[in-house]
Length: 189
Image (cartoon, rainbow, N blue to C red; front, side):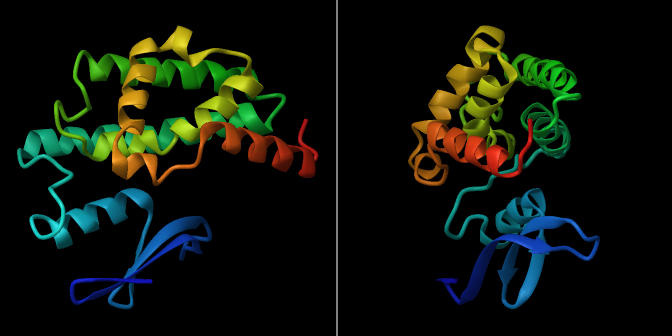
């Protein structure tokens, strides 16, 4: 629990949603806000201009594009990393779809520093959270992301140099070790 100004804030790793899925939840003033992207948008509205810069663009079209790409990441990246890591039968499909999705994201990045141009924003937040799982996907899937998506790897390294990101995410190799131990414990193979 933390106090941000006059607000009581609790961030839980997972919570049983009304739909049965376990999702991240932010409890703000005793009200739950579920799901990562909803939490980020809520934070942007509540604290915008007060204690943090806006995470979403002001322009309505750019804001809609930001939501589209953040949802794309939410729908495509986790599911395919999970296929590679957990399923012998779906691993090749997951690998193909993950690489295809990451190449699509790399194309969208173009030559920009971040997805929002020079400004780190929601699309960067949505994707960089998966960066620590890329090492696991590469190891268990038998591919090298640097060969498949070099611009995306360079983007991830830029993001990891940001103070806010560096201290928020686990080390990718520690995540790999944890993932392999968990896979063994679950007898997945």
